[in-house]
Length: 291
Image (cartoon, helix red, strand yellow):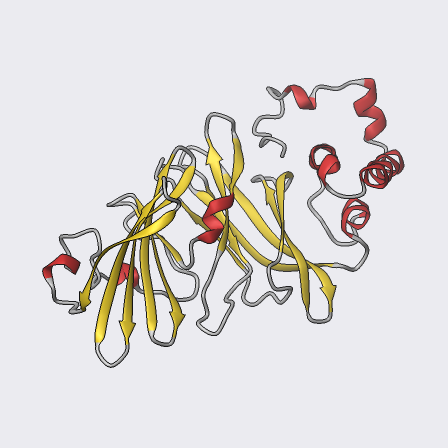
């Protein structure tokens, strides 16, 4: 994935060459993209050239754009959700536009997030295959999920399953590289809620109508690692199972179990669980808390 282009004059990728001049011819550009896509059979090897071409052509209007048609197919791209914001206070406001690539009348085959700078020029884009094909309530969020002081980009296909759970594709901003990188394991966290006070990602989901699962993850060595998981079971009586994840065993280890009482001190506001804290509330388009 191409790095973010922040300053035109300082970026060697934007220095003029004879090849660059030829590539600014729209016909030559489309032909080059056609050859690239035909040879590679898809998107992978054309990404850097596609981003650079969009940037150099100063393209801000994606309606019937030949580059998009060449890449995704005419009439198959639908605008879904816009958001704008700053990655950090010393950076300009960028735009993040989410599109769906239509598979058929029932849903999308993939989602594409296009990142544009303050002038509207394309900086980067991310593409992900959808899990279900049916995209419900897709949206984009900015949140600091690795607690380094920079906002990261999350986008979701929306609620899935009977319990309305959300999963997010996370692209983490790297200030050293001036680019986003994809955190593949973040997608495993259901209904993620960053807690900057404890520097954990909290998660609350439902396994069934009788089982609620609470868990928290820590960011370490570029990974989101499951720390502990609490199952609360509503059967004849309310009980709990508390697990800790053992990465040597690659499995959960039961730590304790028994009757559950939310007023028990081990779940209280002075513990990592804080089960009476509103941070555990789930809902549509959570807002990052404790920033």
